Length: 88
Image (cartoon, rainbow, N blue to C red; front, side, top):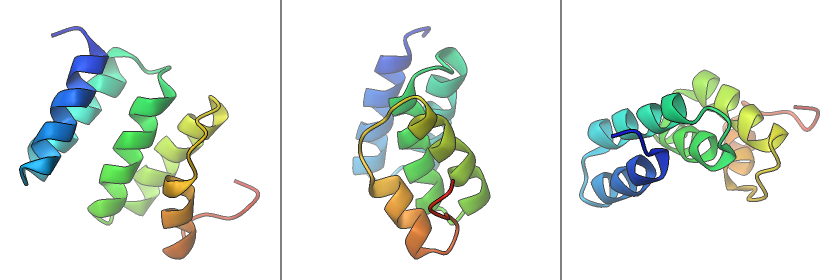
């Protein structure tokens, strides 16, 4: 229960099986357990974009990218939705 990586993997499984609310809950828990993990913030941001919660997605995107997360998809999704500026 205290392993953030297990929560991330379980969240992915839940998302693939259409249980987005449960996937979101698992990602929130992963971030709570390990708030410094950029991948957890990134994945939580992706889920939040999927739900249309751009303000919270942006918060987690900033945390992911400040910690060096390399994949640009979250930033690109926020850009497309008009919720990211290149200076962010």
